[in-house]
Image 1 (cartoon, rainbow over the protein chains, first blue to last red):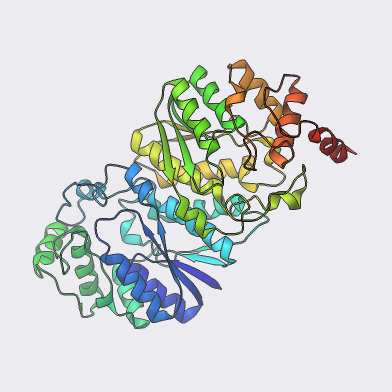
Image 2 (tube, rainbow over the protein chains, first blue to last red):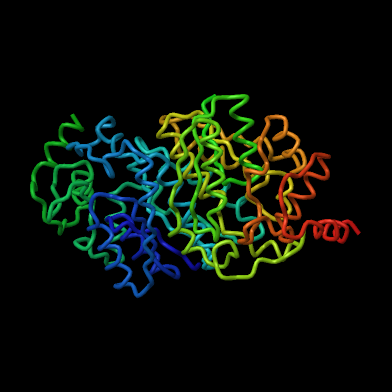
Amino acid sequence: MKTLVICSGGLDSVSLAHKVAAEQTLTGLVSFDYGQRHSKELGFAAACAQRLGVPHQVIDIRDIGRQLSGSALTDDVAVPDGHYAEESMRITVVPNRNAIMLAIAFGVAAARQDEAVGVAVHGGDHFIYPDCRPDFIDAFQAMQDRALDGYANVRLYAPFVNVSKADIVTEGARHATPFDQTWSCYKGGEIHCGRCGTCVERREAFDLARLPDPTPYADADFWRDAVEAKRA
Amino acid sequence: MKTLVICSGGLDSVSLAHKVAAEQTLTGLVSFDYGQRHSKELGFAAACAQRLGVPHQVIDIRDIGRQLSGSALTDDVAVPDGHYAEESMRITVVPNRNAIMLAIAFGVAAARQDEAVGVAVHGGDHFIYPDCRPDFIDAFQAMQDRALDGYANVRLYAPFVNVSKADIVTEGARHATPFDQTWSCYKGGEIHCGRCGTCVERREAFDLARLPDPTPYADADFWRDAVEAKRA
């Protein structure tokens, strides 16, 4: 199946790109520049495309980002530390982001005559992001089937929608994903901060998968306390 | 109901803006710059917002337009003359355009705490545009209900989805829509060409609604032959 993968340069989507390249026909990567603070992620997406020998399209949707205010990913709001704290993660939500990116990716896939769009939404995001849940994925496919009826038939491929981030690490390792060539941190340092929600989640995922984490962190131990506090 | 209206500056969406302003709470107009050949439309949308005393947001999605090739609205492909000719109109389709614009508009509405997004899709487009059909509208709402679950509750208001363009003219006239301040033509002249698919459809709609068409056309009589040819 000719599959276009949405790739942010993060651990999940780079792992997905490697999985698709191994199991299906990867036709390209598409990334979105929505005005995220740090373009480091996009560089890792470009490196992934080069490694896998496919074209990389970066679609500029910064003007959409500007109009959807209130998000720490694009605005001058402090990114919270910690893990699994629903209120502190809500601030990182860009309203309707997945629906917007998926709709654009389906347009690109239809124009390119691809058969599928791959997206790395995963089970660990369900509790806070409604647009990462299985019922959203199903409803999105149903919407697209009607929107493209008679023009194109594009499947939404979301193989991580019911698995944890630790399972993604396991699957990524199976396909030789170079995890040090992926970026998760919401902050803007030279290396991963180790303290923000995604850094803690990333570090914990390697621990649960019982695989070495090749990522250098500014604060390499913060995650243990955060995870213990959450489990308590 | 606080409603944001997607307004291209065309007859349908300007009529919708006037209808919403009269019947509900119009909070603003949003237009999309997707690299359409002519910005004349967007000027009419801005004039509509000013007339109705609401803000006008223009969202730049030109980079998306560039990536979705094959459309006469954005590429250097000749726009066909005529009416109701399915093949000649297919060329004017930007893949997934309505899904993309609606998803963005829902994000804007959620960010602004609006309660509805108004869109002027209409019955006359069903035969060629799948993303103007009632089952698409219903599926889109179902998708958004899941995407925004817990964050926002935004309704899709598409009052023209089952009516003809003639009915829109009737409804627009009821709300004193200044039709001469709307733009339909797919070509780039000073005035409406009178020959392209949308000009013919526009002229016929006034005829069927038995209302005077204030639009100056370069070729004011072409529509009769096109409609007769279609009806034969």
